[in-house]
Every structure is written in C-alpha cells, then in structure tokens.
Amino acid sequence: MKTTTNIKPPRWFWVIGTVALLWNLMGVGAYLADAYTSIEDLEQMSQAERLLYESQPAWVTGAYAIAVWGGTLGCILLLMRKKWARTILYISLLGIIAQMSYSIFFSNSFEVYGPGGIVMPIVVLGIGIGLILFSNKAITATWLR
Image (cartoon, rainbow, N blue to C red; front, side, top):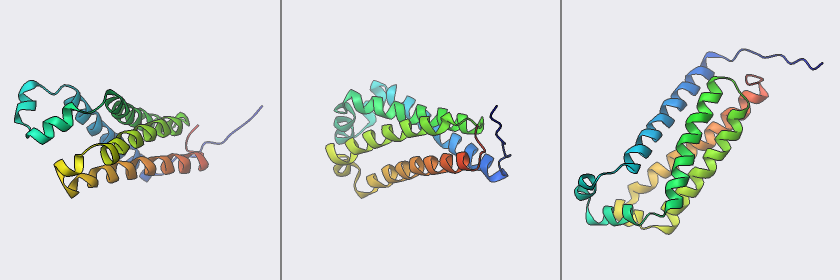
C-alpha cells in the first residue's frame, strides 16, 4: 500500500490561486463578450477594428476558448488541490500560444492598436507560464494530490 503525505499549503497558495481564478474568470467574461458581439457593438468599432475582428479565423476563437476555459478549470483544480490542474493549465497555455501567435504574427493587430497591442499578449503569456510554474511547485511540495 502506498502512503503519501499531503502537506497543507501556505496561505499564499490560496491567495495566488484565488487571484489566478479571478483573472481567468475575467478572461471568460472577455471571451463571452467577444463571442456575442452584436451588430451595434460592431458599428461602434473603427473600420480597422471591425475588419480585424471579422477576419479572425475560427481556430483562433477556438484557441481563445481553450485558453480561458482551460485556465479557469485549471485554477479551480488548483484550489481543489488536484494534480490534474497542471495538465489543464498546459492545455490552456497551448491555447494562449496559438491565439497570441495569430495576433502577433499573422494579423495586423499592431497596425490597428499600435505598440500598446503587445502589452496584453505578453501579460497573458506570462501569467500562463507563471501558473504552470506555480502548479509544478505545488506538486513538488505535495500540496496537490
């Protein structure tokens, strides 16, 4: 019989996990707002923003969904102290990489949004990588089972 000891995580584990969950829930909100953009919303965009929005391939929208829903589920699993969190967060990171790759390399988002358009992709990618490192630390410390 295999016995493992589960060490109770420190308070900062719960703080980081909760903040990460809230971050990902904001991502879900942004995704839903994007997915359900109305004609009225499109009419309020500049011509360049509207063309950028309407020319986005379906696979990018799918990658966006995987990124935000995977990140949310991964954070919930972290807070439930489940090792599966790491796997789900890796899948979310793949969604982030796919989505941001399109945004950075295959679209004209920088022409539309200017240099400030690089800030959010870098922040999102950094948080995605940070959550992987955090889940690795939690597994090594046996906070997850």
